[in-house]
Length: 555
Image (tube, rainbow, N blue to C red):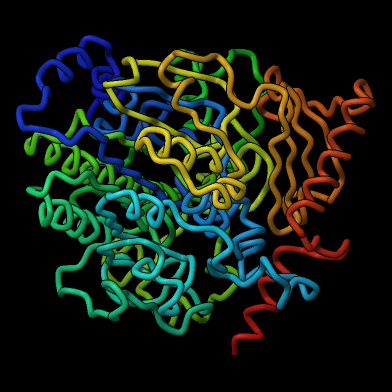
């Protein structure tokens, strides 16, 4: 095994960042307005990359962090499609059609405005706004915001696009990964396409985005590129040589990895020491049989290989921009759409996976296989936080965010200011020097992060309210406090209050000690529900029950 920690540390070293910045000065003429490159990972946990404490080899992402600013208190939605709706529009997900995942709708939400399951036209996308302002607009990757002609990226402001319309798919072929989709659909523009024989999703999307950038590179217009990977959503699959790089890396189990990552986070200064860090989740590693440990270790190796291949692909894009003289006039944003995924679909639908995939040990992670890593490894991915994707706990909604733009951001910066996915669009428009039309500005739920990233302000949301809800998971942030509740299986619908600055792992409910704060944040949440026409799930709602009911409706 390689000593990845040393390699990662080198990637984060300040001296390395200085050398790279000095060597990457643009030689070619650049447009005055910057290019914007938005890179989104799917279901990647907070601690997976080196810059956030992980052992996975991610030098490209780590270098972006070393050359820009790393946000340690950034929040998304608990699920991918609601996050993507806010990432594209800057509006709250309930206003633009993704009030809930279509697979998780409660009966009282079906057919209601804001719960269409696709962008509903109530707010323009950032691509639409930038294209009107003279930007080229490109997208490659997972869309998950509609698959009709009117809701595909080609009708949502993107000049060039190649996308997976659904929420996930096999990474090696045009094949569904779940009984929830009979088939999957890939589109270039508005035309459905077949995939090449050598298709691997991460490589395919990267190649396509680079081809779009090159297509118009001589006209001096800036571009907005949205690279939205399927990685690392299940099924976890990667080229075999990337899987083997992690042979035996995870034989110690998820709790050992979680402990190691937390220690690394304290060394990096992104988490305080002495936190109450819960167990990783899943069964006790020591209680597993040797065969169970062998299989589980390999599943995590596949996941790590998939992350590393994504990182390599990000490095390809950065190197290409540098070669073209575009890099230092490009704002690069990297984030994940939510926390690590704990769901074990094979346990829900065993017959489906046995029929449609090769589940043998030797084939794990390869073409034709299906692999997912379960709650133990998801808990390690979300270190040091509790819970997973789907919950409003920090493990479900706190995600990495890195912004690199050397013209306005110093190197090796870190901030623990509260930030939200709804802040991304205002930030992009700020960097682009583009103002939304007055009516469109009313849709923006967030604020620009650019002054904070530049060191020109120490403020962002301060004591303002930042709230969110999806599938019964609700959170309200104000100052150092977070009010949160979760639907089963992640919680019991009971409101709890945490001092998220002192207790980011949500280990001590302080509602009894702070009754006025507790009451005020519940009132703020009620106001948020009214303003955004939220249809709340009923008290007997469960996520698992809603999934089964909605799957049955599709049959």
